[in-house]
Length: 364
Image 1 (cartoon, rainbow, N blue to C red):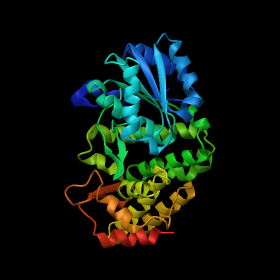
Image 2: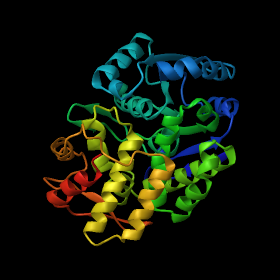
Image 3: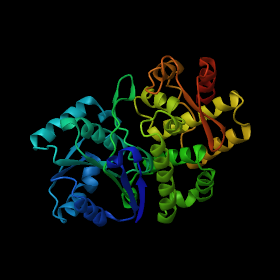
């Protein structure tokens, strides 16, 4: 089992471990029991995950003597709302959950974001644990303490920073992950390679066949490296005020496309389009070479991610939703652009006509 420490020096009580391995649920249960975080635990999962793994995880935790219960909610981004959060909070109240309790987010990014948000506000904050079951959540959303829910105007516009007490990544959960969701998670790994680690990008390119087959050795390498990149950036900039913004590469346009589609386009596919858009903007503004831009686009296509904007999504809608981006300052929407692969930077602003032209180029 691989162990990675997220070391938040200024607030050591907020530091935590990421544990990575295959078929490690029994060891996870022992680690949770040994941590003595709480008197009782509540697993929160969507109904798809609860039907697949709910009883298995409950049994593993209860066998260590822990007091554990579980509640669930409908799956999908459409459930990541204040109404769902309030419904779950009311169920926590009904079950007597108090400050001696700990929540466990069992699921993908939607579950992790929402459970973290609930934990941060319930009784003015109770602890929570991340147990991600999707590739995207394992390499990205479970790490770093960003929580949130969606509103009509955009994705994650309501949320908090609240670090988990631990992140437990069992790669065995990926055995039942649908292919489309597995590919969805690869987008974030490609992002890490583009912004930080060309060697990781080369590994994806050379090993994509084995990665698609979910070879455990390959998965262990790319998941661990992705977690190391994410944690190193979070350690420098926990609250997303500076360098952590490079993790938003592809997300400014990506989130706008995702919400404009009514969340019918997955996060990973939206980010893949957003990465292509950011690369093209970088090239148009004379920062990035055509060769690097083409290399990125070819890899995104090779991985099997979406590389065009469906014609049903209007440019005006994308532009409007970008104006509500939570990372904007005043009227300025910041873009993460590239000088070359592995060298991102945060641009002060991009002219609307350049963005609109790029969106037009990527339209199906």
